[in-house]
Image 1: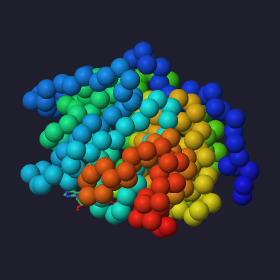
Image 2: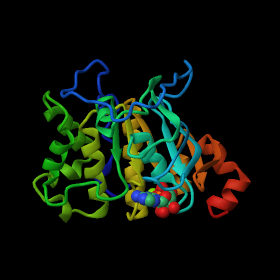
Image 3: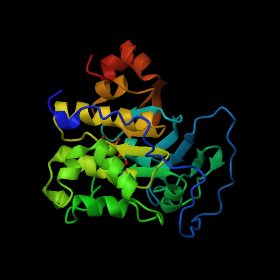
Length: 278
Ligand SMILES: Nc1ncnc2c1ncn2[C@@H]1O[C@H](COP(=O)(O)OP(=O)(O)OP(=O)(O)O)[C@@H](O)[C@H]1O
Ligand SMILES: [Mg+2]
């Protein structure tokens, strides 16, 4: 390990996640009504984008029967070539894309018609691939912005984020735009954790960071999963990400190409040859 500040913090029992019964302020209305609600089976994963098809605006389908899911407290990883539709699948699960066929369910409830904000209120958090922090605001202001839906005391959660990412405490009064790439990603993840999500969705959290910083970020993500939060993430560093994945999805041209445990995908000769560089 390169550095003390990233050493294990032993906060595996700290509850960054939301108490399911906790009230969330604000009235949220649904956007679309034409979708007929589906019902999940009792043993289906906690969050599932089930056979999703859809695209942008009036454009053609980008996703074709694409299924992505994650169990409670597990890590699911989406990999695949550039343009495969990984980010699109994440947007579909988070409600930023019109799902023309298929459904998204959370805890057995059909949420396909809900707005992203309504999904946040249900315990979902999303860190997009780009523009995921407010660069002119301080680190702490970014965390406060992340808690905009909450009406209760957020100090304890800020403290938990600082325990997870100690460097952010040091830099809390600094503009987030002045931070390094890896530190910015910590701000983005920390901001998402401020809503005390049950599911944390990350689109390429290690983009543009060094291998050491990538390892550190993955360690922190494992730590978050151990608190019971489900992690659904897209990763360009496919091999390393699959190593920490309970479940892996290889997407190609908007379709599921391979789906298995992270370990099984790493051991699959065809996956290795085509997607992991041999
Ligand atoms: N806002 C948009 N409007 C129209 N088409 C889009 C939009 N965003 C992405 N696309 C198209 O959807 C397809 C899938 O893109 P997407 O960003 O989901 O891929 P990706 O797998 O995340 O790629 P990368 O690894 O480069 O991040 C591409 O053909 C892309 O051109
Ligand atoms: Mg992408």
